[in-house]
Length: 169
Image 1 (cartoon, rainbow, N blue to C red):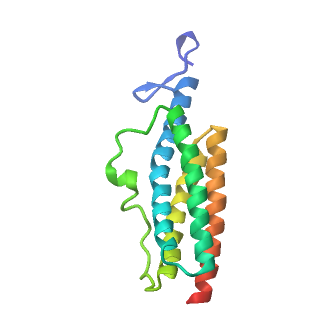
Image 2 (cartoon, rainbow, N blue to C red):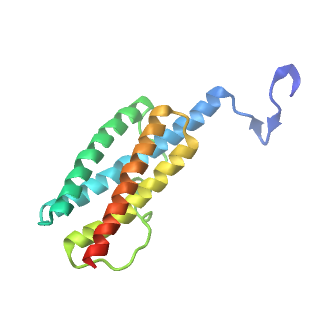
């Protein structure tokens, strides 16, 4: 320990205290929320688009559920984000819209229902990765539950989507 009971200096600054640690975790929470809201909005747009054309009852059920669940989560995340001071700043437009962050995938089906499911798998996969990162960083129990809920719901849907694709290929 340094003089006066202070923690030793590390690098160019002092070790963060409790307030600093809380601020670092809040920034992680803010960043997650700032990025996840447009990510969910993208899934809602994709789902609303397929709802206009699909005749497949399973695809219709999935798209309807995605719209309802992710809109509910957006509302929750907007409230949480407001409590954290609003969206994180300094993020470029590509980051905010998740452009370029989707994993590369193979050719898409010409069947719109199958293409929707094929597109939702990597989309959900990205949300799972983001939520997993959140769980590794946050100490906020509300954010931990949100991250776990996203992981659970979207991995369950990825599994169901894969099973669907196994039957239509």
